[in-house]
Length: 156
Length: 156
Length: 156
Length: 156
Image (cartoon, rainbow over all chains, first blue to last red; front, top):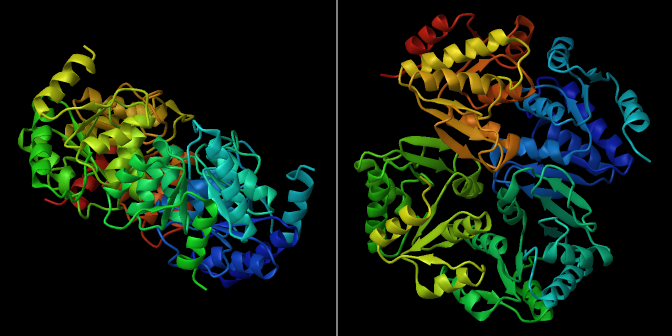
């Protein structure tokens, strides 16, 4: 999960790397499905590495969908699809921050999903830390992030 | 789409055959995802033929999911997920009839999705015909049904 | 609940009468909220009799809302709002028939809501009767319909 | 909007005061409808001042509803109802902070609703300020909050 219009192109590069890493492990990437920002970049990374990409679209058609989505889910329920994004994910990676992204990160934490932050500023992390007793998981580098997931969140 | 508790086991056998035929064409089956009735039987047919099965679940967890779903979407929105089933499908096959199924068939027709009926009684078909100017598509046999789809609904 | 574009103006007159009867009993009318067909006519009847009218809108703004809605609920979830219409109603009156209306009638019956039909043809009633063991409730005249509600469905 | 289990009883007292102030102006209070925390306290304040209280419930029945809701909307869509809360509100007051509340505040800002914060800490406000170019509206006291609304957000 990440902003549709991030301010920093570094975030897009990072999202693409994350998508690639997900696909290289034969995991499935799930995003908000639109041809925009972090959704699109992560989908590109996963797709080009041969992975499956589920796109949970807010609208009632394929209009505006990322070219890299292989499994489109057309919800027609607008931003209410953020809730479906979260419930359908086993692990939530938050890459960058924005209004929609923060609503998803908060729902992920509320519904007890493992939530990992990357490319999120210190004061923004402090905000999420103020809302939970659990330690917020933050990783600067994608290698460390995926190492953590493999060690701690994947059941054999 | 079809009832979760059909009265007639013939319907389940037919649903399984349809699932198999979908998978044998490398198409993706999308169902309501529960371990019940037509959803489960169609998923079994598709899965055993090596196909992908998307399950759009009404609850907020995997509880009650068919064992044959390969791509679970956890919506948490209850019967409102019927709408997502329809919008996410390119072609809707209605196999058997029940309250939930009739709500999906009506939504499919309302939203202009090609809707094919099988294992539905004459008077029930008349009902749907009374709600539209288009000719209702009904097929007794799955061979005829898939022949129709391939000839008329698939773009090269 | 009733069609947004009924073929028969008689249905609109009947919907307006039903809205009026609801309001005259100090009950609250709940509709799909759009400025169209049965929704609009029932809302007019209730509003002009001094009643409250809840409109559960499919879109993400007030655009297209009936002028007679006093309490707009803006859902943004498209036809998924049909499910909210049903769950939020204590009693469902189906006036006329169409694709959206039939999806609502079926959901109402599925979720155990008392469902009363009026201005629905015999063969269409037979369809709903074929989907349930309970006797379908049909009333030609609104007086008989409200008498039935008061005698059988209202708890003191 | 506010947490269902706030840490600080001061927040509940403040929520009740806000509910009372809303009702005293003949405005309608809309909340998440549950018998818990800020929702319940604000509903109590509004109800006891003679106002209407719309409760947008997440479940599929009235179970767990605040006793002070006068107009229950039963959505059955879980936390997806947060989106409906926001779209249905003309003005969003955020009282206290929590995971669900932060998801609602973010959606409110994303969808352009006037969003006023009260009983929210400085660093939490900084978070929301970091996500928008508009100046975040914060009011320590309810008098100042309602004065702002009347001067700036109410059209004659």
